[in-house]
Image 1 (cartoon, rainbow, N blue to C red):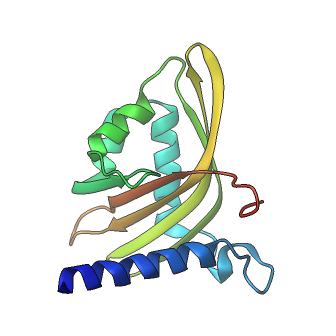
Image 2 (cartoon, helix red, strand yellow; image 1 turned 90 degrees about the vertical axis):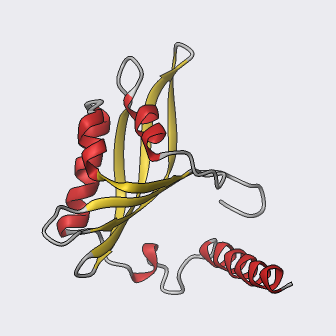
Length: 163
């Protein structure tokens, strides 16, 4: 019963957060006052873009922490290596562009988020996918920043709820 109560509380918080995220900030500004990405967090986002656009699997693998997790838009958690395979395969190479970056950094952890546009060829036809990505990073003592968590979400339009 205790586990069910905890799950219910987590579910309620998640639903509240999702509903609040649908509302624009009171100031009318985008991003809710979180500063634009800068420094190492922006550098990581740019390195990610460069590696995807060049189909550089090795660069992406080097950026991932050994226990990195990828969460897709449906809540699945496939191995992060599978995510690398998806974004680095295909002919011609997938091309990703990012915008609206935001980040925050502490001594040994940080996050960066951005909107993305990913262009690829699917079943012989060019396709463009838009979405938002959020990345959590950690910095081991004496090491480089490593991606700990990647969450990718596709833009979705729902009549009456989103614009």
